[in-house]
Image 1 (cartoon, rainbow, N blue to C red):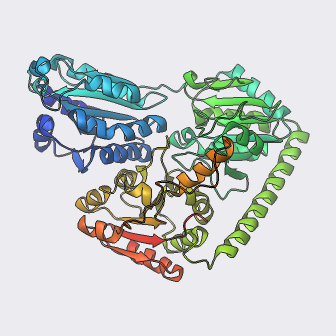
Image 2 (image 1 turned 30 degrees about the vertical axis):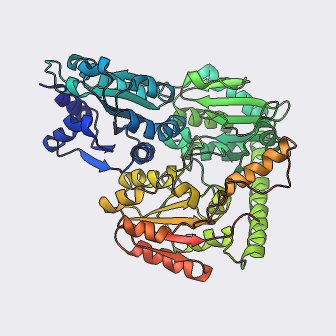
Image 3 (image 1 turned 180 degrees about the horizontal axis):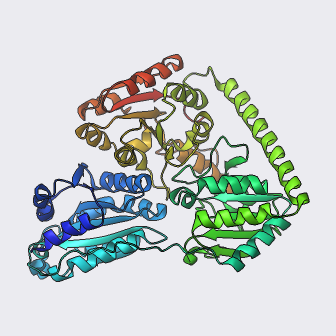
Length: 553
């Protein structure tokens, strides 16, 4: 058999039922093989970044290892930004790119380059298949490396002549691999002792909780401890119910501000990892002085990687959290009474925070252009209760979190790593993973233009997605960050915001969407927005709503 058949058989052996890609000439063996593998769908993107972004969100939403097909050096280059996001998100991906015939290696062929070197900095493993006899072993290893904790992308370059070579070595796949160890009893005992000694514990939750299905166990442990639960600034999942009384807030993006947010905690428990993705440097650790720091993690490699720990425990997250809860519930009556009182105090804080937000929202309710709190409330009012939300609203993220209820993993997805443009691309993958749930994709206008070609993929594959673009005609997050920079570095703060406005010319998202086969409308009046969103969900196929909102004041 030929190398391309071994490649396709390897995908089938590893349970792959779709490929996300942008085809090219060196991918001809793969594309030509698809007709012989009708159980493998090909999700077409008009840009390699869209393919990678969609695959990354599909992997997060489905729990499967996603496969991406890119095109030689320029195509791989186009995808590297999204590959970086997938690496930061721990998305299990096997990324392939067609490579020129190896017999042309010394002739510098068109589009040729060292693909392995290009991909290496943003992947867990990067390799080129040199002979067809290597195909089965390389693919077996690529899937293993992509999936094992911490998960991430593996890259495989596929020279066109190697895909056509003959080999007797067939595809292989391991059938049962269990890699998450049970927590060490001594470690559980040590952590439980610290939890029982804490008088004001706090938990910081990571995406690993959602990926491992441990959200229920974490909720039960937080309640048993009487602990507030904090969220990372950049997160991919809803790992803890955002309307739960113990839910606190999103942490800032520098260590000093994070420590201030956690002030008063005498124990901080990090669940999963890694922590933290900072934007600004500030000296010191992101924990209150004197607080014990505990980390629970499935991968020993990430324990105490960035910060020293009072105790660290590696193990299967759901089992570990159950064991910790059992230990806490076996604590003294005085501890359990104190935990109950802490839960009551957290509920009061939650009620006060909701009331304060509602008061701020009302003050902005009738502003023109539409305020972000009003826009999020109206969008939520028109969205079905069971909808999946893919969010890249950035500066509207806090208002979105107040307007929507995300009770469990699968309700919410966003991007990691800080690179923009993930939202629209990710919506494609999330919808493919959740075909039976309505999907709302919310993006800022600046972010949308990084991956606007995703609209064509949505139309091409007839995906029921409601795209909402928040139009303020500016890179608002950059303006906020420029303010912070000027303050931190004592720079000139009386100047304007250079190169951060998108109003000359103004972007016409409805016309852009129409050109890609997606119907759209523009809404500027808040009392029309909820009905427009509801109507979009009632219509088959993708649709777009451009919402004109206020800019930075």
